[in-house]
Amino acid sequence: MAEPNDAEDSVLAGDDNPPSQPPGRARARHRRTLSTQTRVRMAVYLTFLLVAALAALEAWNGVAMNERAHREAALQQRVTEARVEAYELAQRATVVLTQPAQRDAALAQLSRSVGHAAASMPVIEQMLGRELTDTDVRKRFDAWKLVHERLRERLSGFVGPGIPGEPQAVESALRHLMADAEAAATSADGLADTLAAMHKRSTGRAEMIVWVQVGLLVMVLLLLALLVIEPMVRSVDRRVTSARTLAGPLRRLALVPEVTSSLVLITDRHDRIRWSNAAFTQIVGWRYDEIRHGLPAEVLRHPEADPASLRELREAVAHALPLRQQSLHRRKDGMDLWLDLEVKPLRDPAGKTRGFIYMATDITARVAEQARTRLQWLALPVGVLVHAADGVITDSNREAERLLGCTREDLVGRRLPDAGWRFVRGDMTLCPPGDLPAERTLRDRVPLQGEVLGLRQPDGGLRWLLVNSQLQIGMGGAVAEVLVSLADVTGRFEANRVRPVAVA
Image 1: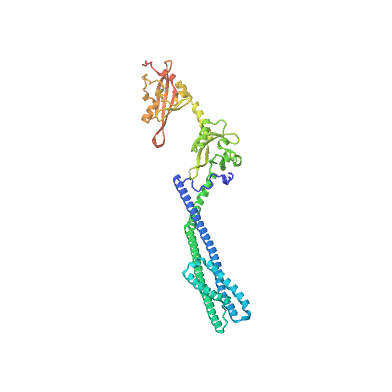
Image 2: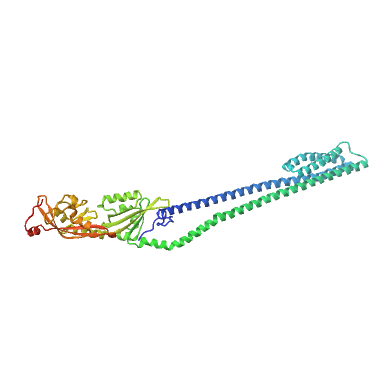
């Protein structure tokens, strides 16, 4: 039985094209497969790139939103602090105006608060930055800045010597002071509300961007499903259906090398044996594990094999050409083995040689029978010449060579009229070359029986021959060959002659 091969070395691994598929169709299918694989690969890469770009945009948008939220929260806090600060300034100014006993301490605190309020204004303006490009924000900020500066100017007058002493003046100063503080607080609230509305709008835009990104991602995934996943699923379904359809025939086809009586070897691209069937082991005697990785020409080589046959086999393998020959090999036990051997290269869809398949039939018995027949042919007491359809002699036996007085090499490959022999009829007239038995049989397609011809010998004598011819018809009614038999009847013919007739 055949042994399993290594999967990575199998010449048939990964070959999904049936051996009988035309090369052009196999190449077209291979190109379509590569084109599909390229489209799928490009679609997946583009999808990954788009998803990565959306993820990076989402991350950038998240960072920007986070920074904007922190900055807007800080602005809201500073504006709220400014609003509270306006009421604190009014409260400290009230203490200065209404409580003479605490005036000195209150004045010191008021001086510090006025200075702090003056210093915070540029900071808030700087923090607003890009928001000041908005018309509404700029308007609210300018209004708040104006009333805030008016409040600080009024409070600065209290720090100096201009503090009123009369009750009516104090009351008037307090009334104006509270009005300015209320105006500053109101302006601060307006600015805070405007910033809050602006923050809400920016948050809405950011959320809209997020939803747009989510929508794009969903669309990309849908396109991926429609353009990549769905075609792949359909392709897989088709392949599964095709595989199920071919499973039975392929299983039956796989049984052929095992159950056939022919010897089968499969080799890799280096002509190393990768598989053998049971018939090979049964007929040759070598198990697969004994010849694995070996060269068929070396495993089966016979020391007396024809060098020309070995050379043809090597050239066929070297150039990846098909070959058929009948050649002598040997079994494991050293016995002769004649094989009708056929070698064919195995190619992938691109036309590259992937290995070879050796198929052979044991013809040892037939060759032995032919050898025995040949011996009998050579030992016949009657001479026999075999003529091809064009009259050329293709074979002869020893008796024919003796009767004609030449060797086999003098006969084979020549027509009898061209060989220089001279024949005469029974009446001693010269027989023209076109009237020789083989020529007449080929021309008239009629066999001859009992024809007597005399062959002129080198010493001038005659050897009388009884000649018969037989026509053999081949395929389609065409003449295959003519067999001519020769028997020496010189003694009997001379005895029956009445008198000799001179031959010109």
